[in-house]
Length: 294
Image (cartoon, rainbow, N blue to C red; front, side, top):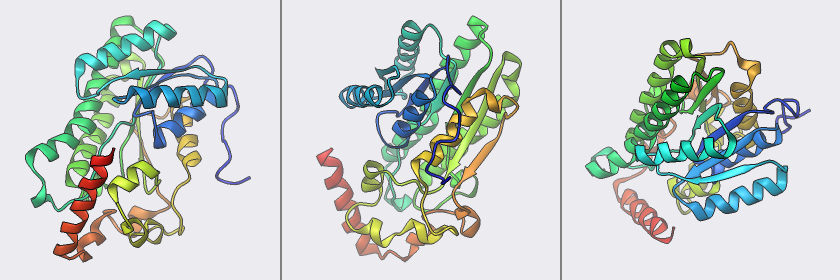
């Protein structure tokens, strides 16, 4: 048996409905696929409805499950409430919220505009707050129990990291929210947990984060004691366990899955200190060019 294999039995999530924000691509898509394979109904959300529809069709074909695409900008509370209603109308109930939607870019903080900083805060922290509040209030009002929220944070949520300050700030807030509500809302039958992944490269996100040949020069595997990056199935295995009833006594926990990276050197992007000022100009131009093509 190897780490790329699936962990739980086939019916581990049968009967559950799971909403995955940012589920149209990358890690959100990988987790959604495994949830479907384990028998769950899954609703995936993002702002790009066309991508969501394509992903949902692909996942249904691969898993024979039911995947509902729901357009939603998590920064807008009204859209979050409409997304929740769409999932409930389709499946009758929602049992699990997976807050996976995120945004990030690397930059010296003094180069960031207030708006750029706000963009990351709004997606990661405000978006997670919006979804958590809407779903939590719904579960309380309907007296639904055995529900859970799983938040995707990052190892630099507690260490901080240079050059990704908005992300570190927002993820730290999400982690505090996770631990706080794990205590406050446990009486309503809700569990709150988080996963802090290390490097799990996805083409879209990492091309935007580290454009050009920078991702080759900035080899994340070299910072990991196990000398490799994570496989998507490894993260999906952990997420599936945490949203399943097998983890019914796990509450308020953040589980790190990073091969020991943060212990080796806190702050994933601290080594960018070696990049000279003129290279930041080139990098910023590449990021803007990449953004313009998307």
